[in-house]
Structures are given as C-alpha cells and as structure tokens.
Amino acid sequence: MGTAVLTLMTVIRKRTEISTEDFRRFMEHEYGPTYAALPQVREYVQYYLSDSGGDGAEEPIDAIVRISFDSEAAMREALATEEYRRAHGLRQAYLRDTSAGIHSAVLDRQVRLV
Image 1 (tube, rainbow, N blue to C red):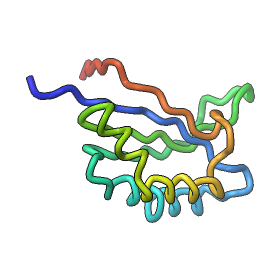
Image 2: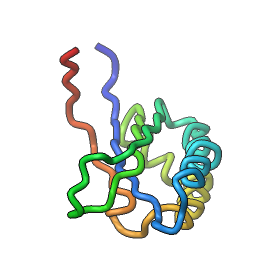
Image 3: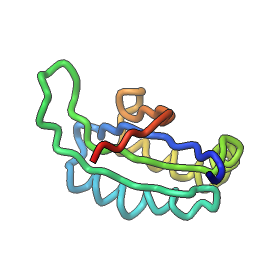
Image 4: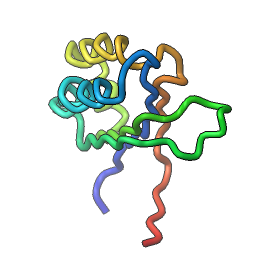
C-alpha cells in the first residue's frame, strides 16, 4: 500500500497579547501558505479551536496543524530551506516561545471509528 508518510501534529498556543483574529489571519495568510508552498510538504491542514475544556491548569490551545511529508528525509530537507527559516522567524511574533507555544509530535497511528 503506497509509501510511508511522516505526519506531525502540532499544538499551537498564541501569545496572550495577540488577538484570536490576528492570530488566525497570520496563520491562514502568512504562516500556513509558506509551509504549503514547500515542495516537500504532502499535506498541510490547520484546525482552529475554541478550548472549552480548560480547567486553568494549562493555557487554551488555539490551533492544531497537521503536516505530512513523504519521509523523514523530505521533512529534514524542508526544514533546511530559506522559506522554512523565514516562517520560523515570522512565528516568533505570534506564537509562544516555549514548547507550550508550539509542540510537535509524530503521528504514529490513526484509528478512524466513524
């Protein structure tokens, strides 16, 4: 069945001083298109959230991004581009600095029940 795909799920929290509207505009019109234009990117999907389950222990999650590459080598190639470095620089004004602001994990398995 086809080649293996490397998919990352990234949890994103915006800086507190950035409005939700400005954050979403930045993600949709500046940040996201930079990634989507990289030839190594197979899929790039943004999910915007209204975090309704917060108990105060953590800041709300503002977005989750799913990004896929044909391989780990393709991902590393994309991360070495000038375009990626530019996007990384742009996000510093909108996303939190630490892993609480942007935290990526490799999707090991997806189970679709419905």
